[in-house]
Every structure is written in C-alpha cells, then in structure tokens.
Length: 160
Image 1 (tube, rainbow, N blue to C red):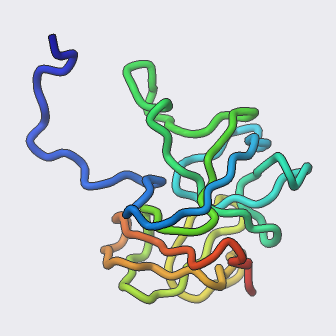
Image 2 (cartoon, one colour):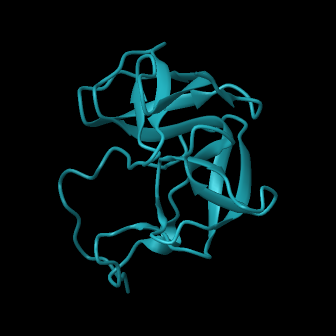
C-alpha cells in the first residue's frame, strides 16, 4: 500500500540547496558551528576548527554552499528547514547547485554573497558582500526566484 495517495498538480521545480545535474561534484561534510543553524543553498565559511566546522559565510575562508538534505524534510518539520548547530552539513565545493537569486540573474552573471547571512546574489559585490571568484550563475531567474550556480573548482576564492 502506498503511503502517499495524492499529489499536487504543480510540484516544485527545485528547492534551494538541491544538487543540479549529474556532473561531477566535490562535496565535503562539516559540523555546523553557527548557534542559529544554517539554511540550505547559502554560502558558508570555515569555522573555528577549519578542518571540521562551518559557519555562515564571512568575508574570508569561503568553504562552499550548503546542500539540501531529504532527512530534514517531513511532517515533523515546522517550515524552518536548516542544518541545526552541531549537525553535519553537506557542503558543495565544486559543481552545480540551486539557489535563490534575490535580484535576478542571467547565465554568466557573477556570484556574490552577503557576509552576515550567506545569501547568494548576482552582480559585483558591494559593501558587506564578498565576490566568489570562479563561480557563475548558469540559468536565468527573475528577482527572488531559483537559479543554478556553477562553482568551477574547489579552489573558488572569496574575492573583493
């Protein structure tokens, strides 16, 4: 007997933090150090222990983008889907991933993130943001919609 007997007509195309494409990916696992937890599809930096911990993105020490996990979904979820402090988060360092683009983007746009929140966006970084050298938006999105980011190598650095 099936556990799910009905489906909505319009399933979501994607969600922030989902891996896109069957291309090679470089993924690492790190313990979440941030007390409030870390959402999916946001930039993170190395934590106090740079080999084992991750924190919400800072202006230096960019590590990657957090991956969504199905284990965090389900009936017990209150809508605040995130990696909680001390949980082990998957972090994409190279490959393709879905993320929300607050201002909209087109293929080839630069990727930056807000230093305090890890929220990814398009265009050149301004005050309080950090440019990701070696990362580009791969698909088109209107403001606030999902698009795909390509991190071209695990050597991507936080630029200016």
